[in-house]
Image (cartoon, rainbow, N blue to C red):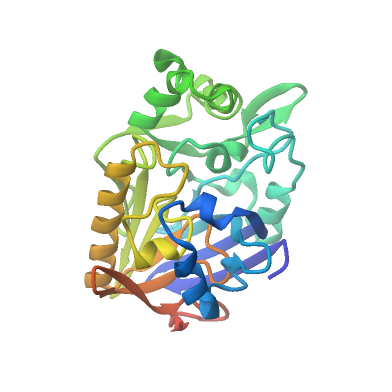
Length: 311
C-alpha cells in the first residue's frame, strides 16, 4: 500500500471510505504489545508480515488513517489523525508533522464543509489532530459545519480540570490546547457518556481502558455489522490474545476486559472489526478460538465490495 490510499466498502446502506495518510514501521513490536512474546510474532509471521510486522527489524507496522461514513444523508468522520505542524516533543512520529489530510479528503470527494459529524474515539494525539487547522496563527475547527462528538470522560481526563491528564505527559496539554479547546470555544462539541445514537445505523458506546473515555462506534444496517474500535487493538496479535495490552493503555486491566467483551460480541454477531491503526486491509472478521480469537477473513474494497476476503 502506498502512503496515500483511499478505499471504499458498502455495508447495508452505509458507505465506508478509508483514508490512509501513512503506513509503515512504527517501532519495536515487542514494545508496542509487551505481553506478546517473540514466539507469537514468529509463529504467525506468514500472515503478520509484511502488513503488520517487519520481521527483519522487529518493528510493528501500523497505519495512520481515518474512516468516513456516509449514513442517512450525512457524512461522519471517525478520528482526524495527527494534524499538521503540532508541537509533540514526546511523539517523534507526530512532532511538527507536515501532511495534507484535508487534501486527501477532498481527493476522495469530501470537502471540510461537507462533514456533518466528527467522532473522536478518544483524545490521543493521533485521533484529534485535524480537529483544527491553523488560520493566521489561530487554531480553528477544520470542519466548520460539523458537530464534534467527544467522550465526556476523556474531555475531563485530558482537560484543564484534571491538569491535562494529571500532568503526566506535557503532550497531553499541548494536544488539548491546540486540537480540543479551540473546538470548545467555537461551540461545536457535544460531550457524551455511556451511549450516543447518531442515526438509525450508527451508535457510539463507551469502551474504557485504553483511555477513561475510549469509545467504539457500532454500525448496523440491514444484515451487515461493523464495529470501529479505535485503539482497543493496535496489532492483530491482540486478537489472538485479548489480554495483551498496548503500551499506551492507561488502565491495562480494564482495557483487556473491554477488548475481550468487544471481540466476543464481534465474533457472535459477525461484526467487521475496524481498528484505528491496522495496516493491510485494515479490518477483519473474527471468530472465537480457544481462550482467544482468530481471523475469519480480511476486508476487501472496491466497486460494490461487500464481502471480505479469506485471511
